[in-house]
Image (cartoon, rainbow over all chains, first blue to last red; front, side, top):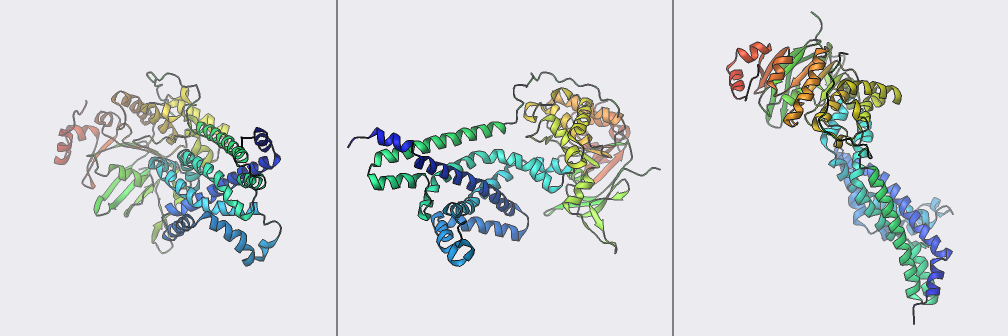
Length: 243
Length: 259
């Protein structure tokens, strides 16, 4: 059986694949955004000086790194509606359930990335910000966090790419993301090579786009004056004038 | 006599088992420049950090313009440390310059200087920018507004750091070894800016190893060693005819006590 290019291109251009791919990207990106926010909160708990806060933060990271993501998805999708009647309504879609599941699990990993990023910011930066009279929340959001984000970008890029591929786990809760779409076509036609290859191409394209996006973000965090660096020779000091 | 700008009263500070400050007292009058000398690791920086309200003393008081700062006094006379957000308000009146500059790496020169104006004082961006530019002009850095700290020499960074501390109009400027991290050829430009400030009447406390600067610019020179201020005298007396053996010994170890 030869590789049938017609089936391959038909699959590649089919709306089912495109929809599956968009679902995967949307799920991964949304979950990553939520996980970053939640993870940031957990990271703050972890580095707090309050004993209870560090314990709660530590417990969160321990729990969600210990249990399989698949189990979390099954719990949310199957056990959730049994325990909470509110989840039996139509709004509780597989996408929504997957979003919650991926977000809370990923938050544990993002918490560790952000914790180390926050701790990597030089202590002198805190000190200078406090000395200027910035209140604690502005020390964090105006000075420390922007510098921590720079450190957190590369590992977060890894996480996002990994997450994109993990979205296929959501097939167990009947979410028709990219790989599930390919799989369902295969099960009807038995054209493994063509449909899997089409999915492969989609993954390559999506990950390439994500990498390009990461590159752009990293450039924004380089903190150099674009092309306006004049030669630093001997600095001239104009005499200080009285106030 | 006018009220002192800054007063340290019997400051004590302990790190683990070591008592770094064993009762430090001194007073800085308006427009006065005090130089604080002493061996490395003796706790000079700790004194400045306490006065900048960045750390709490274990005992003792700090008075800024006659008012005790860093603590809240309750009706029965007992005191407790102020929470960080209240300390932040009191810190606005104190300018601090660090040994390692500590410019905000993610902000350009102008934004480094405007940050406190927009985020603390509450000025608009344009007002803040014009005041910051004025201040950067004063330290000779107006030509580098859009540069980031990593693109500047140490001396330039420190001059920006001085402008950043100065722009909120503090009552007193604290300098923590401002030239110790600089290449020798860059020390002069920073000292020049500081001398200009002193001439303009700024109240300053300078922890330094630059004895020539201390002699020329300071109104009073102090030697801090072993947790206490050993000697406190006019520059002339301090360098030429110190009263204490410890001071004489300290000065003899310096490469030069310039004239």
